[in-house]
Amino acid sequence: MYRQSVPDVSVIIAVYNAMPYLSECLESVMGQTIGAERLEVIAVDDGSTDGSGAELDRYAARYPQFRAVHQPNSGGPGGPRNRALDLARGRYVFFADADDYLGPEALQRLVGMAEAQGSDVVLARQVGLGRTVSDKAHRHAAEADLYTSEVYRSLHSAKLMRRRVIENERLRYPEDLWYGEDQIFVTSVFLAAARISVVGDYDCYYLRRRDDGQNLTSRTRTAHETVAHIERVMALVADRVTDPVGRRRMLGRHFRSLLRTALRPASAARGDDPAYTQEVYVRARALVEAYWTPDMGGELPRIDWIRLYAFVCSPLPVFEQLMDWDPAEEPSPGHLVENGRVYRCLPLFRDPAAGLPDVLYDVTDQVKAQHELSSLAWQGRRLRIAGHAGIPSLGAVGAAGAETELVLRERETGREFTVPAEPRPVSEAAEEAPQPDGAGFLAEVDLARIADGEPIPPGTWDCFLNVRAAGVTRTVRLGRRHAPDLDRTARRAKVLARDPGGATELAAAPFYTAYGNLSFEVVRRIPLPTG
Figure 1 (tube, rainbow, N blue to C red):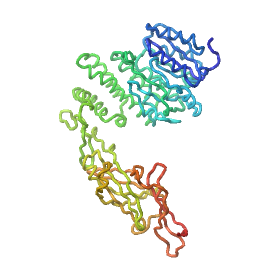
Figure 2 (figure 1 turned 90 degrees about the vertical axis):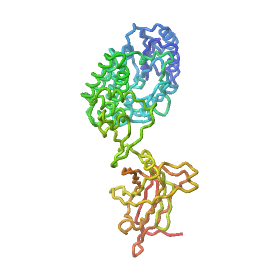
Figure 3 (figure 1 turned 60 degrees about the vertical axis):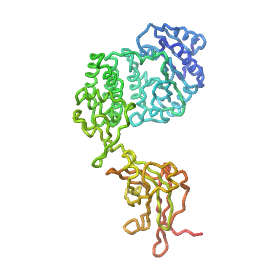
Figure 4 (figure 1 turned 45 degrees about the vertical axis):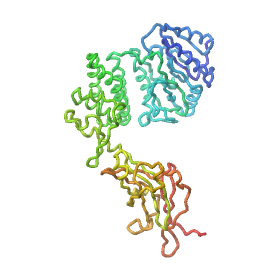
């Protein structure tokens, strides 16, 4: 007999010809450690012809918490999911695909997170079985901001959602789409959620690419089916999101999708199906004209930003040449350093026939310095700081030829003192060990005379490096990357100066922050006993 008490979770499964994977999916749901008594399972058979319906009936006869519903084929998962939502009674719902399965503790952990944090949506860490999943989207978080975290990378339905939010907003899957319909529904739920969390410390959901190639997403799509869901979800975001950061990041995610799931197949089909290509191109160009803003460039990988610019502003052969470029088959593009700017030499850089502007290839702001702190020691009142630093993406000049400058920055005021560092050759012993990319440096810091011959003022001073190569400067925090044998234990303060009467003294002590970075605490104090 079907239970009448309110379950914690309604697990919804849309089923169409999913054998033999369906059995593993159902077993993983009914074997959840949360306990079958806290679940209801609503599985909707969407006109299967492979025995999936009979398998659902077998489970319904075995478990009172299991409900099997049968209907004629609707053509996509939206219809059966909506029917299950109409029947669901749980405080939460979780959508599972019939060819995937759950880790044993998945629902217990997801509900535990939702209860502890008051979450309306909880993302479940995914494991790809022949499919790509986003690790960034599933980093463990008690609270994840929709606009500034990476959760919006994941628009698959396999999430725990508070059913009250879905019903209050009257949210349902679009039934006229079979591809991308989950992006529209999940985006709507995200926007309605007051709090989003992520269970990222447990493998909750196993996302499978079927051996028989019958995943729904493998079905051939028309031009309309390729673009329609992107058009709708972009319109939804543009209409609902007024926060500038959120709007930029969310629309940027869909421009990435437009390039990879619409423009790429359209470009590849240009010789075999020009009508398909033409329709996708026309509708994609309309999306760029409607929603693209210059600040979205940073939301795309550099090559995709170049491709999108070429799609709108260059002759189609330029765009299609860029789409044909496969980085896996080409040598890694190098960099050109010119007038203090760094350009990545991706395809068609400064090709006169393409006419693409240099700014598209300018990666100066993305260039990173690498560094390592190898030693720190007092020599009298001078502090000797040694290590390696460089900008390896600039080639040999950025690695072995980098120049370094030590910076002490007062935490409260931002006041700075700089100390040039001397180049330091690699020792013979060090040559035998792996070295970080960069040139050796040695900075001798006289804290007693650093301020125009006067001692450094009291305060907390954070330690940075300015790393320069080929006219490019990068500033990095010093200390977190360090030699394995570096002594990072607490250190006694070093007296820098005493006042003429001896009543007080100025002392400095190096310490490492919670993030492992090097700082100095400078205090004026009453002299302490020695010995």
